Image (tube, rainbow, N blue to C red):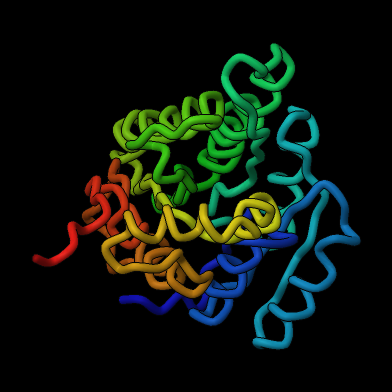
Length: 258
């Protein structure tokens, strides 16, 4: 039920970080993978590693802020593989600022990338899935889908929107054999947030609030990604699955023992 052999996956934002990890996880499970980034050169490492695993990899430029680019990438991948069975809707960005310093352009960049781009990429690939009566769409969210953090107002708004969008699309496309779910990571170190992890006090603060007492490692997401992409999750749709070590339970620093 977890075997993806013969499936064709599309992973947006796969040049680095979690997107790269998702592409490799799907390849190890048997899928051939289309990967995107704004530049082809940045995809070379991911492409070679997918091929080393023994799966086919198709790399294509895509900028989710450009409607034509998005549709061209989706069409190119469908033409190359003949179909797309799985979408990992991962491309995103963040601009971390106190709320009073967020500009109009900051908001537009974050929300248009993370939310508008995710919707229209799903729309671009859903037509082919509908025609075949099968599809797995995994929208990548965040613990900020369900929790708020200072300095992340537009980012949290975009990720909360991903959660709501996931539920709506699951209703739209469920009758066509398509499941739509949201995989929401907690605190994982990536290139986008690496500067935070240089602050030992901040890391300690976060880890005190994670029941499993550590931040996430890339491999921690592999199982859930494969599960939501496979037939093992055939009767699960419209859900947000948090892979966050438990931080979303609202844990606080444990009181000292008397």
